[in-house]
Length: 153
Image (cartoon, rainbow, N blue to C red; front, side):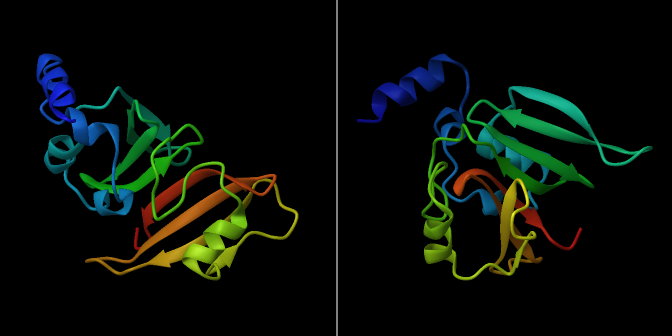
């Protein structure tokens, strides 16, 4: 029954309380403007700068469900899910083995060198106004991090 959660969300003053707790497909956040993202997820828990290189910084928004959004030209260009992200995505959840990702997504388009730590694989996602990819990071063969990103930036 969702009514108690809806009422709690209204009491907490967040009209997007339910959507901020789980994102059905994080890849769909790519390309959103700040207004569209805030309508979808609400305000972030934290906003902080991330160094791009020696002279440039970018803004990151961290949400309490362990999802971080990175911006480029006022559009979401990357969505990162860290090891604490509890919701499922693309049929996966954190802690699942690499073999499960390959069974669901097929052979990776790219991987880092065998024996590299941490190990990662990436796959192209369906084109949606721009090319998109997902990179999955594995420690000891288990999924610990996922990044959805626009591969044209």
